[in-house]
Image (cartoon, rainbow, N blue to C red; front, top):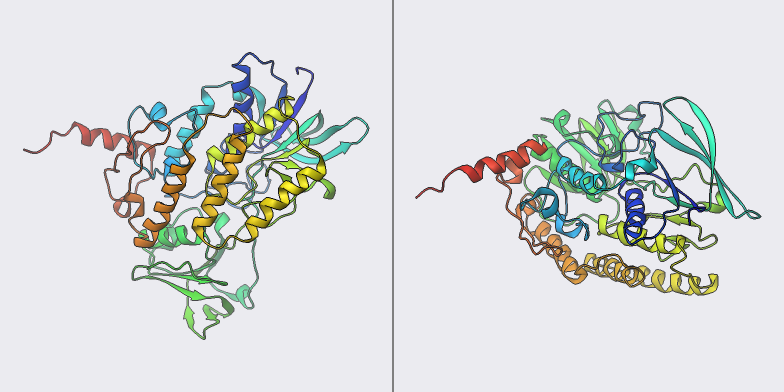
Length: 458
């Protein structure tokens, strides 16, 4: 095994999950293959590694992160908890079910800091090109060390693409928008709601990012928020100050014209129009080509590129589950790379993919989507020794979360859930989410400790 070389592109949650999977096996006495992970940012965490920058990073590369100030988890943390590293283990006490970004990033780092993962990661390094030699059955990866401006190559037996798919914006065009006098940005470049205080904001899109950015702008003082949908509205009861309208047809100056004949003036436009699966370092024959959905075609078990299973993709699905799904994928991928798992023939793999794709095509409701991804993870768990967790209970929590958002989009983050890993009930945050304007880890944790020190009133 020591002669095997494994390359990983990306040190976000998926890439880190792959490293952790190998380390878990090493703890059982297995020899480690040679692993090198390439991360173009200067720290791990992928999307969770917040930066104030927009457009390009420190070395002129397209910026990866889409995180913003005041981002809080928009789903219960109990639904993404690592089954081998609980929130209790990390924070040593119960915390709320919807932590802010710095707290979740701290949790991600907590697990990986227990390991030797940093030894395997080359930061400020980006993949430029990948080729595969049919004769040697090896990948050659051309890389740039951004810090010292050096180009070099590495050869691998397996290549894991863990670069994510929420970093290349899908930026549509609307007639007249080039003459809009206010701010026009994609959600990828949104860094906080402060700049939109007292402004009339138009968000185009009906995704989770549109929903969350719209509510964040409302919370932090936007004068009005309009969400413009292409086919279907988000369909929840909005508070006064937020509304939905059908798709924009065109702009004239600062006026937006909508399909239903409505015309309104705006100060800023934010495109919440999704992202593209983009792999500029991969040749056509190795590139995953898909839209954002729960089961991309041509990936056996959602992981192995069917034409070349040595090419592994992690985290390429649309996601209800996140961290724990990436783990289950990484454990299965690891077992294949370590010869602990044999894949069926290409034809049998095609039959299995078609079965999942057919079911995916029939999905109609959010609850069906949750059940689909739950069954997908159950399938992966049956293939490896990743620590099992109660998926049926997690699915139930997802459905409760969906209902909570319908009941009140402004208060659902004040709800609490019970961990399926430890059984611990989350503790309500010391401040209602709508009143909490400080998302720092210090405020989140220290203030809670202060409250505990105050004697109960008799």
